[in-house]
View 1: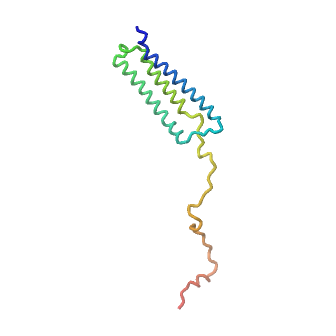
View 2: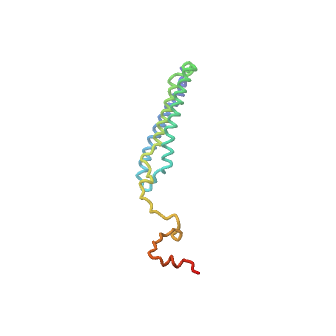
View 3: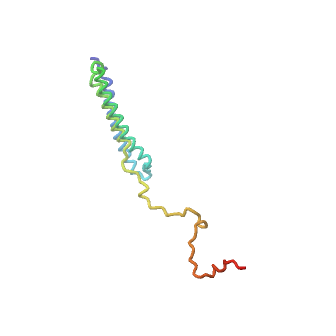
Length: 150
């Protein structure tokens, strides 16, 4: 065997290790960032997007790994490529999934609107357009003043 025959597998294993190292380093740096006084938490919309997309991407990665494995054996992959090289691809896909989790999963949930104090209620109309309650009439004098006389 030539020494370059396993270069694909070795490159994929090195790239997998680099992804894991980068994900762990980025998570550690984000923890340090959170301690800074000018730290601004993630917006709730971005938090929700990350929470929704992470499992979808991981399912796609799992599907790609299973499909690639089946195609490797169905199309006679062991004759074309050593198993060491082929296993580099699922390992890389798994490392990419872990990297996504480390990058997208927040350290703490963002502050939501539920934690904020309730806003003071404001009238929907200006004060002059708000109907006033009428006081009940106690005497019949105002009614008699409205009667028509001949």
